[in-house]
Image (tube, rainbow, N blue to C red; front, top):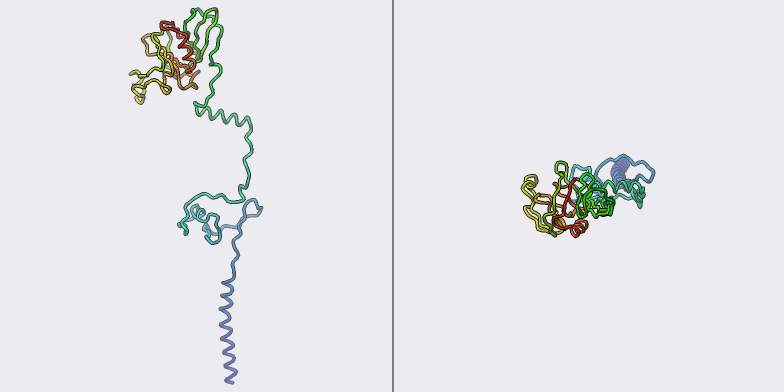
Length: 266
């Protein structure tokens, strides 16, 4: 009797020991790795259970995900940086832009950056018919149409494109060329400095000087016919009353006229 009882107790103890071992075996079983499905695989993504990715399970930017969504700092001290996820982009390229659309885009960019605006061929130097009353050697400035004519005689004139005064700075009258200077220095007059106190008080002549390569001074006025290092302004209302030309054009005109030449501004 005693022996049977002892065997029963031993058997019961063995059963109790076996249960925890079975439970430990369940806990120790390998858990399946989370499956990551990308959009181009055609399967729906499983619901996201956490914003944190364990570093040992992935090398695809766990620190970056923590940076985007997490409330806690990254356990590995990742610095935030973009990492392209495989499968979304592959080797895809954007389709080529339609030629007309590309032209429109280039025009919009040029409008935003005037330095990229092409020179209008209408303002190239040309020999044209002239039916006015002025004699040969006279300069005629057509302010509304942004042209300067050097009358040649025999019903012909050389025509140049020009930039003229902004609204409120245009003028008309008859002057003479009182002086000519190559690569002139520039000293803004007090009237201009009152409007633009940021301007330099004096600038020596050179390629960066706003008077350009040549200047022809008009009588005792503050106005000049001068060159410009901003050719995209030709054909516009841009100056404070001076008549500006492209540097190559003002050099050509400078060599054709003398001090004392008549200038008619309309």
